[in-house]
Image (cartoon, rainbow, N blue to C red; front, side, top):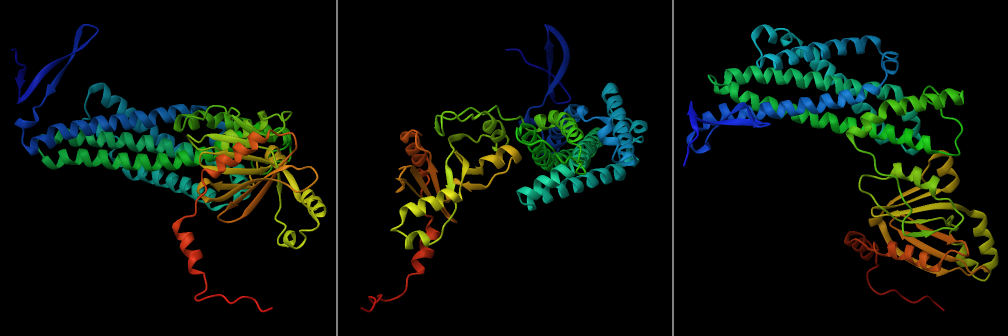
Length: 447
């Protein structure tokens, strides 16, 4: 039957820790306050909590990236880095002092109030730089993308780290600004509303910049991790296309060591891949090197369902239909145009690669979304070896895989079955084919 103590229209409650009172909470009944009081009291308080959380979030990321060595950063842009770190240090110092005294007095606020334009300039500069990297990577094909990442690795590292540092300084500044507005909010409803606006806009900027940085750092880290796993590659043109393979490997290792803590904080790495239940490959094939490289090509949550090591036959055109009576010659021609292939079927796509190029360069030949599968057929070839084959018809091409004798037929059938699960013809494609049908009846050929 007890009641809470009341002060200024708010109920008071004690905050306990380890059995002792360490603070006091003000509980404001929503039903007893006006809309103006709600904005002035609850809204700014929640906004301040949100800003503190944002500042802690970005501070943790910047601290995580301490592994990015001073040599990597300052060797590129001494002046830019000095200007940015001076701003970051100034805001950090003021934020620390404000936390210590529990407010932002005028004398402390005036220390940073003239820095808003410079902070915005730094934030915009590195957002533009990171955005340019992301667009360049997305526009390029696989080969050009790799070359860009390798050549610009140090610049990418600098810009990503500088963007996070400028975000931290900007978020700290906005937290100080919001604290000033909150203090004035009890007398000015506009100031109280401003706290919420600052928290909302700062969150939006933080989310957008972190999304871009995560994409950029993820692309570079994936590339460096793939290169690190390549057993068949002796040299690495990083950066500036150095010819000395030892120096190149050392550069790669240094960059990867520097960026991995940040990459792992932004997006935790996927666990090591294990061989799936269905493997259509000779028992003697060591899947370890393939799995270690393939791991870094998979998206978050993507699962490998089947691995295969067939020969992928290049398209031979209509000659196969014209030479149906010369099966032996056709089989020989196919053997000459085939190459050992890695096939990985995931729950989202079909990845194929020439096995040697995958191990030596980390190159992928095809990346086919699973929803583009139109038809799948498993059959025995007509050559003397009687090898099993899978014909895959996608929206854009026809593919034939020939599996060496000795591979379990049941595994090949399982591969075909996994692919067959996705067989479909979208209504739009079906309608397009139907509309191509000539009107009226087709006349039989003369004679």
